[in-house]
Each structure stands twice: as C-alpha cells, then as structure tokens.
Amino acid sequence: MKHIFIYLCLVMAGVASAPGLKAQENDLLNQYVRQAAENNPGVQASFQLYYAALERVPQVGALPDPKVTLGYYIPSMEYHMSTGVFDLGLSQSFPWFGTLQAKKDEAARQAEARYQVFLKARNDLFYEVKSAYYELYANQKSISITEDYLEILRKDERLALNRVEAGRASMSDVLRVQMEIKENQTQLDFFKDQQETLRTHFNALLNRRAAEPVPVADSIPAVLLGQEREALLDSVLQHNPELNRLHREDAALESRIKVAQKSGMPSFDLGMSYAKMDPRANQGIASGGRDMLMPMVTLHIPLYRKKYKAMVKEARLQRRSVQQEIVDLQNTLQADLVSAINRYKDAQRQVTLYKELLVQARQTLNILTAAYMGGEEDYEEVLRVEQQLLRYRLALENSRADLNTSVALVEKLWAKDIE
Image (tube, rainbow, N blue to C red; front, side, top):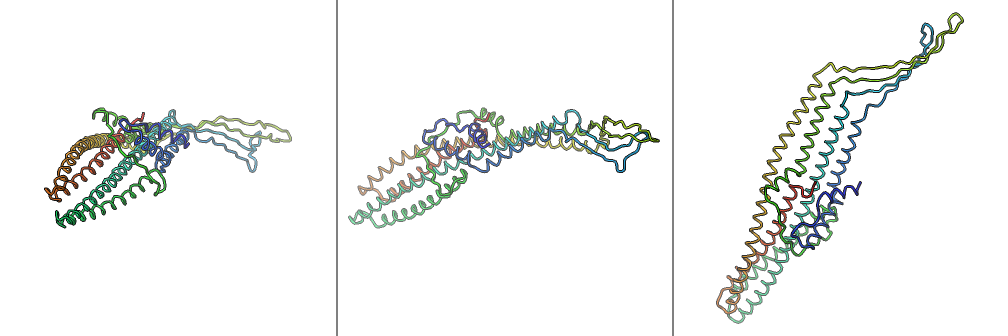
C-alpha cells in the first residue's frame, strides 16, 4: 500500500521539472517534494482514509446474512398421524430491486470524494514545501547580502578613520558608520534566528529532524505561468480537488436519494422449512411419519410512510446544500486565482524595477565614492546610497521568491498535472 501511496503522490502530482528552472534548483525542489510525499504523516493519514472508504463499497453492497432457525419439540409435538421432532428453517432477506446497487454507487462516490480530499491534502503540502523553500532562499540571501553589506561598512569605517587621522574628515563619519554596523549586525542576528525557525518548519513538512540541514540553491530563476487567465480558470474549475470533492458528494447524494426511495419499497424473505416427523403408534399400528418440506415467502410492507418521505427529503436538501457550496467555491476559486495572478504580475514588475534600480544605485555609489575619496562629497550621501543598494538587493531576492511562490499557488489551485 505504501508503494501505491507514493505512486499516487508523485505520478499524479506532477513533480517533474517546471519550465524555466535551472537543474540545480529544480532537482532540490523535486527531492524535497518527493520526501514530503513519502514521509508527511498528514498526507499519509488522508490516503489511509481514502482506502478505508473503498472498503465501504463491498459492505453496503452485500445481502443480509442468511438466517437459520432450529426448533426442537419438548415434549414432542403430536399430530394425528405423526410426532414432530424438530423444525429446521433457512431464509434469506432481499431488499427491493436496485437497492444494493444504489448503496454501492453512493459508497463509491463517497470514496471518490475522499480521494479528492487526499489530493487536496497533497497539493496543500506541496505548496507549503515550495513556499517554505522560497522563504528559506530569500532569508538565506538576506543573510548573505547583509554580511556583504557589513564588510563594506567595515571598509568604510577604516577609510573614515584614516581620513580623520589625516584631518580630511570629522569623527562624525566614523560614528555614523559604527551606528550602521551595530544596526545591521542586529538585523543579521535576526535573519540567522529566522533561518533556524524556517528550517524547523520545513523539516516538519518533510517529517525530518528539526536540525536537519536544508541546502538551498544559489539562485532561483523566475518560473513562468505559461497560460492565460481564462485557460487557467478553466483548469481550476476542471481539476481543483476541493471542487471535485463537492461534485462527487453531489453524485453520492443523488444515489442516496435513490436508496431512500427504494427503502420505502417492499422487501421480502425467501426460505425453506424442514420438519422431522416420526411415525405415531395408533392402537399398536405405526402410521404416518413422513417429513415435511415447506417453501416460505415473507413480504415486508412499509406502511408507515413518514419515515421514508423524510429520508428522501433530507437527502434532497443535503444535495441542494452541496450544489450551493459548489457555486460558492467556484466564485471563491475564481477570486483566489485572480489574486494569485495579480500577485505574480506585481512580483514580475518588482523584479524588473529592482534590477533597474540596482544598476542605477551602483552607478551612483561609484560616483559618490570617488567624490568622497577626493574630499568633494560628505560620507552621509555615500552611506545613504549604500543603504539604498542594500534595500534594493534584499527587495529583489524577496520579489523573486514571491514570484515563484505565486506560481506555486496557481498550480495548487488548478492541481497541476492531475488527470
């Protein structure tokens, strides 16, 4: 069963390479997704419930157990020509025609709904793994960028001290850079603590030790959606597991209505009774004694109709409720998809913006640094542009992570590669 579970998780999940990803980043993600599919207890629990639901089908589709009765006469029952010794009866109950098939159809649809619950749990897990991975990437980049910035600040500090000793700058330049170092050192410590928190959460998704190392790729090229909004919406409405679960429940309730209707029809028992008879002595002459075999038919007539009418009405009301849930979820999914696509577009704009700003900030910094070295510019301007450069670098990596996370969210909504 475990092999079947992993097969459904991986083959149906579509963990194959996504377009636009470099091999290193794609291999890491696929590896983590596979580990999550194999090890996550929440998804495994959902899969076991699906298998349990399948076992309901043969249960509800079976006939009631046959009934065997045995009666022994104490004292013997005396008839005119014979004496009864015992009675043996065998009977089988049968519901109205089509009742068992309707029950099997309902159970099968419920099992299909449970399978969609499993698919949703799997999709949610894969989105969480990807989202957590991109968070780890962005935070790791924040650590690296902040460390680089601190190296620059320490060089600025040495430069400022040299200029003070040469009488070409004031001590205020040294104090400014020292304050900036302290502030960013504190921020660096926060990022490192945050990395531990993110790593613990990520390992929990994969059901691994909290301290297990989590290698992260050096870069994450942008993932492209590759489809227009209308095509994506069609895919969402066709493949979303939560929506498909409601469709299966709707079909199950349709079968439940049939079960309720057939429950109000007559049922019957077919059986056979055998009576063992001994001859009876009559004035010294043995007579009679032939055994008896009697076919039997019992008809159960459902005269009290309120119960059955209520069963049908209950199932119909439940079905109307599910149908309204379907409409409501379709509207919600459409809104969620539009939100995710807009988030993707905004992240694209942010990536483009910060790439351009980084080029301009580096050019500006080079000009200001040269002017400062020549004594033509104040260090405060240099520091301000260095701070801008830091913000742009951090924002660029966060935007890249946000862009890929938004694609993962869209794929979660339309359950990519589920057939």
